[in-house]
Amino acid sequence: MAMERKQRIKVFLDDDPAPFAEFASPVKFVLDTTKIPDGEHQLKIVATSTNDVEGIRKIPFVVRNGPSIDVVGLKKNEVINEQIPITINAYGSDKIDYFKVVGSETPKGIPTWLWVLIILFVVFGIYYFIMYLTPDLYKSFV
Image (cartoon, rainbow, N blue to C red; front, side, top):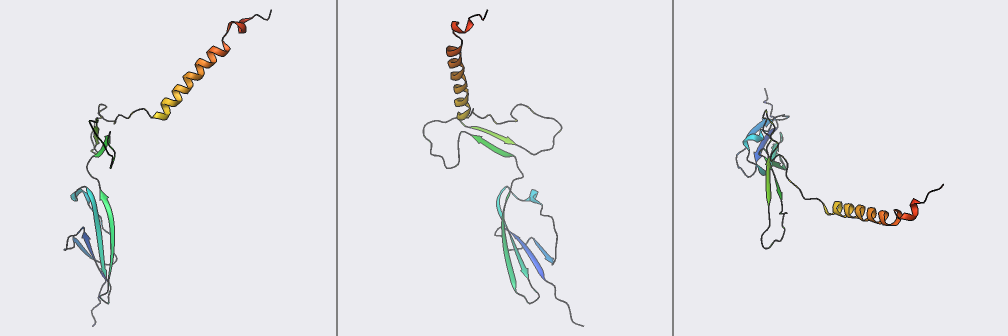
């Protein structure tokens, strides 16, 4: 009786030389990211056929189980000098029963385009007031 050889799948995380899982093909499994530190990682899948020929696939991914961090005042690769104010806020995904209003939103400055729009609106209002609200317009029709 001949023994049937199955296709094997080995799953590696990052540069670890030992696989964290080994399965017979086909497989469906759940990757628990709560045990992986936040940051960039790579899943390497090595599949071996029945002829002992290997195929490799690498899939980069990012784990973010911790709180999301928002920074106002400093951008990536920005050149800075002197002193700059920086606001840092962290948003967690914890399931809690209360909502904390203070610190739940990162403050943002008013965009320049909105200031320009407000100034144009005020200037138009002043222009309208000067041009069309003169005593000549208050003449009676009777």
